[in-house]
Image (cartoon, rainbow, N blue to C red; front, side, top):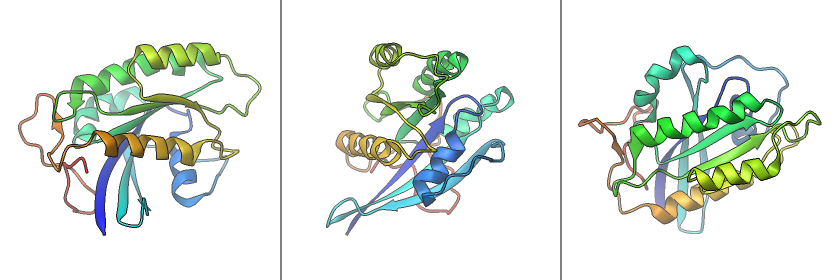
Length: 203
């Protein structure tokens, strides 16, 4: 069986639901309480993509606090795709998505120089206090090069699996052989990995 190894970044402001999203996707569980991510957390999920393909996802849940931003170049290295998440009840977290996308595009790219595939997730859509309109989200996604945008609810398990399936599908479609991803400004492309498996590859 052919196995693809993909490193996926999960970024966005603090408290938008990134850690809860990863936990729901990996284990199927939801908890209303969580411990704030300090730096980066790692999770792994294996997908049986087809009869002949298996996808091993390394999910890097990156802290949204300002004091950790300087480490992002290290965390981004070797990534083949990204989830950019915000909270529909906090307009500031939506505005910050522009910064997160710019930061990604300035620090990492595909071997051909293109942006890595990114999906924009509008989380907590189950809450009635939303302040960001669907039209604003779609316009922002289109204008900033996201492959798609989706409204999600980790609590209700809405669009969690579908969002990741869409992202993985896009990554696999744009991958070119096993050429390592390039991190802008870096010469050494050896990727950090929590389990020591081969890294720096797109698929």
